[in-house]
Length: 265
Image 1 (cartoon, one colour):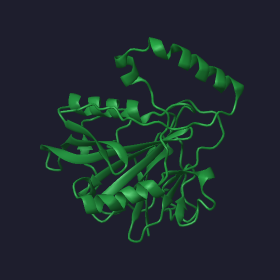
Image 2 (cartoon, one colour):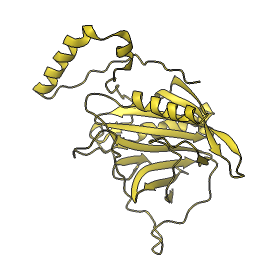
Image 3 (tube, helix red, strand yellow):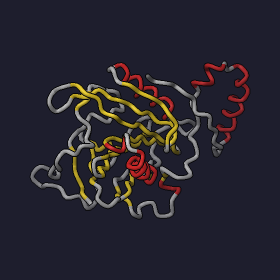
Image 4 (cartoon, helix red, strand yellow):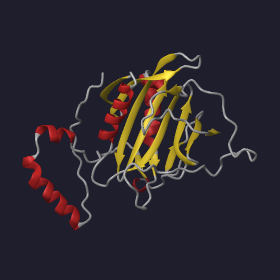
């Protein structure tokens, strides 16, 4: 069952322009007319991120110890396997596989004054429950997250369920979504390792105008080894953490996997 809760948080936001000040004044003037139900559904500003994930401008050397994928700088962890995922010939997400667990990270453009995670949680939960899955919302190690049992098709053709954690973070003009699967979705100790990878990820938003929810595109790292015949690195054997085919087809589904390019560290 999906239990909807409201996170009670406030964050001081910098005001760079006079227009922003005018908007704040108008919001304050209209606040007395907002009902309790409307207040529950109002977008929240991005929360502070004292432990990450990070914006490129927040670190002195953001690329140190990280793999440069253009729009994302992913921490390099010993024993990891990095997969980049492709849709419409564009790289849109990266998955770090560590043992029998994985975390997929994908970044999107977001408005300056409000976050997206509160809306995206509802959309993901609604998509999964419509397909017969179960979703619970709780405040975990990365803030508010969804823990779901997602309907999947098993290799033998039977229907099963996969346990998955959906985490998210609203940053300055970007939103970073993470999907934790495998043992890390159920084991707290293993989950903490994947949470740290999510925290150590750096988003490179850039200054170009982007519509909210547009994906921040990625590129291959400079040292990626590509098969010149196919243009794709040889695929590694399927890991236990790799999600089976799912019937969930929401716009932010982590289960729609395109071609993969694998880098093993």
